[in-house]
Length: 492
Image (tube, rainbow, N blue to C red; front, top):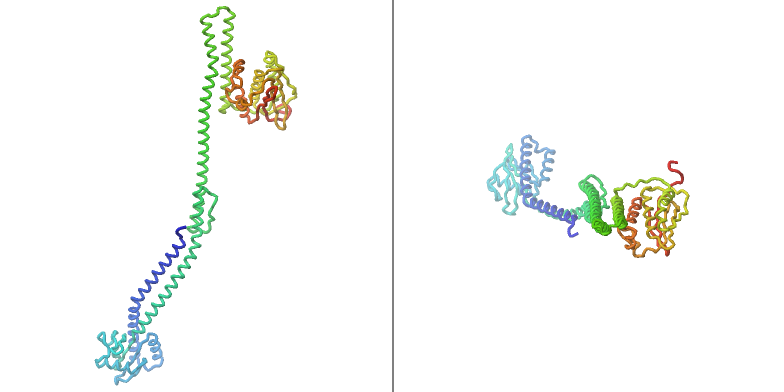
């Protein structure tokens, strides 16, 4: 950190203390002497009142009074002398009583030995001794019963006290400034520690790290700030989480829209391609009928059969596309029910045996015992029908279709195997795509649209079940799995 609150606190404290000490020193140096002088004048005035009262009450000779007055005199460093009417000393408190007596006599006769203010009786004044150059606060005058007095206090002792006071204040000031700076630096460590902790938390928040929380202690301003930082952290974390969720949903929506647009383009392209040939055939044979190219009944029947066959293929493809569209967009509801898959397959094979016989195909099915599953029965039959019709259309060689139903743990697997040529390896990952055809010429021969296996994929994914294809040297096996149910009749 380039700057520190602790250093700021210490510097401000040192500055404030230094200014305060300097101000005190300036005031002492400028006004303390005048204040002392005023206090000294008040003390002199007060002593005069005491002496005047003592003389009027004849207490001057009393020991208790003399002790009281001497204590007062020593406290304020005052010299005092009192003369009677015969100029004899009746009370004196001074180191040199004769000097004080002579000074009083000089005031009485009008020949003072000092210079300065013009002395007025019974008034406090400041003078300078012409011999020693010493300044005094003095007062002289007359008391009752003809007593004369002089009260004198030297100014030099007062000035020395001021100088000593200023020096002491300077020494104490330096010590106080140094000690105050150190003390404030130490105290500021305790004050700045939580602030630095809050700064660290806020820095982590800038990096979107909201795990750090301030431990609130007390109820002061820093605790309030820490509590608000914690609330801000939780609020920001929740807001960012919501924004990320919304952003993720937006990305998914954009991807879905792009996927839908791509599917729409692909759908239009594939449908146009698939419908192009049958429409051309229908149009050509219809024009032939209209122009009576062949008038014999047999030719007309052939033309009509071609038109009907192509129209039927178109109708079948459109139906499959509608079914696939509903499945892919989730518009078709999956109804999960419990049924016997063995019975479903057996019933379908019985109805489709004519188709197999027409192509000289042998259909084998070894499993005949009931196997119950949970699935959509109608959609399951459609999956099996697509597998079976695909097997019939591609059956070759010995022309055998082998159907197996077996229970594998908690699943029932249905497989349809047909003899013939394996699917090319490069085509295996594409056979579930719409309109994809391994052998386009053969697909055209039996009317394949390339949609059947796409419908299988959509149905199985709608039921969240597995499906797939396996190549063998003598054929291809398609399979799908369903969730197994307990044996027995429904409702048992």
